[in-house]
Image (cartoon, rainbow, N blue to C red):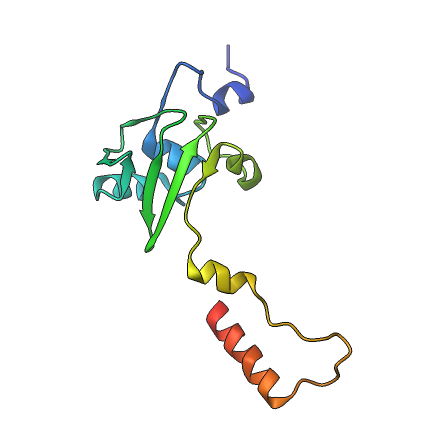
Length: 135
């Protein structure tokens, strides 16, 4: 008998999931091979120790991932085996990552009054700078 889809998605509460597969399933890594390479290179840590790709991910552990120059700190809440959509994947972990300066800059857009008319040369230059840095 073939297992139901919902049974394939989540692991049993007493079980654990390979950490490379978990990082792929919750969409931290685009492919599972990238997640495996991160583990082998020592960019994935559970607590303070670097882990191998087959290390079991368990609920409540703090996983630190160094990815593209950014440090992500996550805590698994729900263990999943298969890749799911982004909104559902975000429900499976708590993100304790520190806020970076680039995230703060992105959250503060260029503000102008709606009925202030045509932008001045200074306003256009500021808009151009924002557009160049956001690419």
